[in-house]
Each structure stands twice: as structure tokens, then as C-alpha cells.
Length: 115
Picture 1 (cartoon, one colour):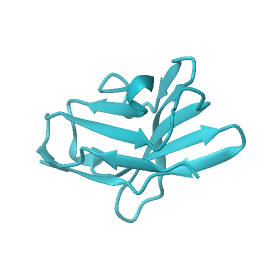
Picture 2: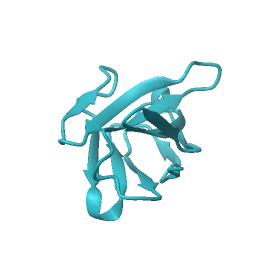
Picture 3: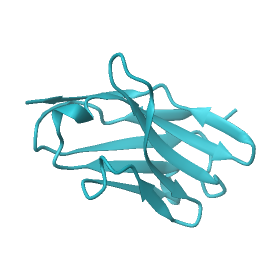
């Protein structure tokens, strides 16, 4: 069973930056896809960004140009660098890993952007 632990969430003012981390309990080298999702209060969880084992990245239109996803295989960690944050970026951010046919989620980390 793979465990994912997110960290780095905080309260930040609009226009600010944060870096989220997602650390896995085992090597992420062979993880097919790692992704970030977020869920605002009263809303459905939405996809934010992903990175494949080959380093290909993709972003939701709402964060393109402001967020950057990266992975450090040596540290078993995926990062989400967020800049130019907006109040609408507020929510719980979740890490997801897809390993062959299995999917794993972390417990989430809260990001709050004040206006």
C-alpha cells in the first residue's frame, strides 16, 4: 500500500506563492502518473496538474502559466510550485498517484488565499 503525504499548505495573500510537496512511502520512479487535484468548499474535486514518469506535464487552464509541477525521484517527492495565487485557488490540495492499475490519494493540505 503506497502512502502519500502532502505538505506546504498555508494561508497566503493574493499574488503570493506557495510550494506544495507530496512525498511517497516508496520510490516514485515507476509511478505512471502523479497529479495534483484540489477541492474548494462545496465544490467537486478538480484536476490541477499532472506529471508522467517520462516528465511530461499538463495543467488545467485555470492554473496554466502560474503553477509548475515537478518531481524529484531521489526524494520520492512531487512538487507543485504555485505563484500569482488568487482567492479562487483556495481549497484542499490532494496528491494522486497512478501505478499501473492502482490509484492512491494523499490526505490533502489546505491552501487559503486571502484577497
